[in-house]
Image (cartoon, rainbow, N blue to C red; front, side, top):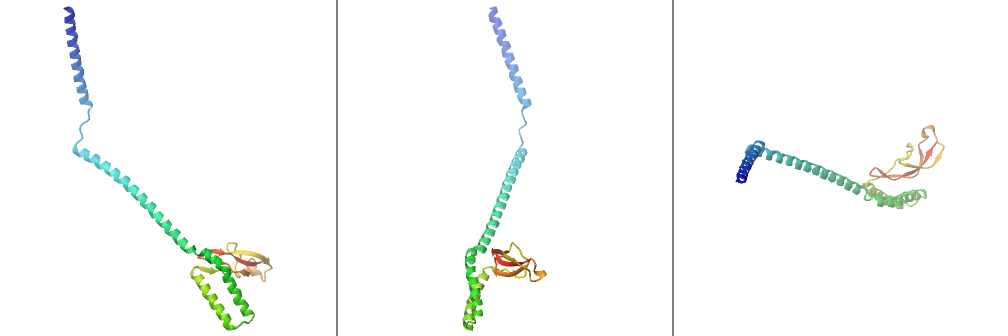
Length: 193
């Protein structure tokens, strides 16, 4: 009996301890628990999140727009340069023909050929030269200019006829040409020293 009494007391004590612990945890939960956010607080949080997403998307859009604009400008510039220089190979190949025309006209004049023949060849030469000129071809003005390695190729040096011609082009052997302000053939010159 005594044992039964002891058991009952122990079980009662356990029940009391369990209830005490249970109420403590409930109280502890209540104290540490956060207050439920109000509707206004929820809306403010949503607004901040949406504003952050908007800023990120806007930044991405601006970067993408800038990249596209740079791409567009670069391709337009490349296309323009390609159009300007597309005929460069053909024009370079035609320069010897232009030189031959000049030599032919000079030879006709030197040998006192028929004036009508000279006029006909000059007409063809002028027409051919004007077509190339419309495409951006310009001859270099080298005679009497300061020798410049960016434009001229010196074939030889000779004593200068005067002091002011030292270091300058004394004679042009072959005319140099520019295509849209870019050298496509250097002028072959004689320099005075």
